[in-house]
Image (cartoon, rainbow, N blue to C red; front, side, top):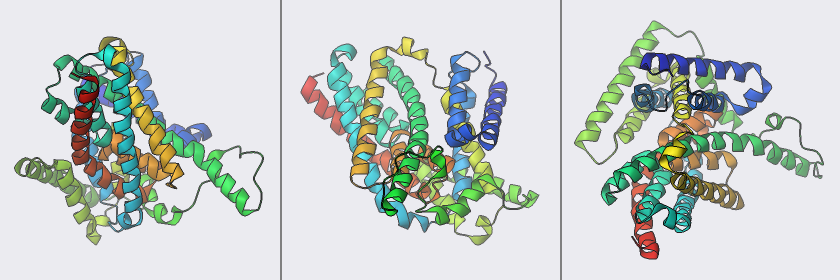
Length: 398
């Protein structure tokens, strides 16, 4: 097994390169997308013993690296895009948050005997983490004084389910969007098609195609030669923003530093000279892709034996119920699949995961709204977690 962090970085870089190449040259992998392919390859390598389940490389990619990617991508975004999809994204996020709370409650009731007297604590933690990301799992667990063994097992199960759910959210809009668009076209023609199109990705709903095209290109093309001047300014902006956000997060705690990071990056993005930098979107997108590959590598299925099936079942049921509610109820009230997928990732993985999904699939007008509701989840998740923990304790005891 490869354990040296430099070697792990090398393998993950190779995974991303392969995923991008497969996406560019193969129709099947083009439909899956390089982000999903990278996650699956990372999971494969870790589960066959090539990559470790934990590494300092993953810590770096899940921290400074992905935040640098967020900064670079945000430098390409016009803040006015949040006006278009904000209320819709907020509604989708709310539906997803309710789904997480219901899912954790169902899990607790079904698995109380298998897990034991601290089941109510786990219900609160999983409600929190699947409302606004992993930061909330730690916050609620520390406040409830969850035992170390259960805490560690929950984190392992959370990591696995977050990676699996990212793959699911990357897939769902692609699988179902073609059929929706085909039916809508058939309805406009006065008939319902009897046969679905052979290539679902050939039919997409073009409600935001024009708005998305410009930023989508910037995530995959430099739109001109990248100059040394561009790289120098990018380094200054990224390092300065990371340092300033960390300092502000420490001084103005408990406000998370990622909130300051996002605010600073967005303010800088409104400066024409900054937004004109070449290569920001491409470099940011690359950092997001390698972060996703590492997320897949952390999902070691063998850990199921160590942490115990009941904890895995708890996480799986919670996310499963969340998924049924967010996509089922969301579609019933007229919310589109793209918005629901990004909002669900904001629930389950936080703002970084929401941005990763929006970036990977080119849902550029959902980018800022996804980050916005993800940040909201940091606060809402903790409140929801404590509420569910209290309610479940009253029902099953503990």
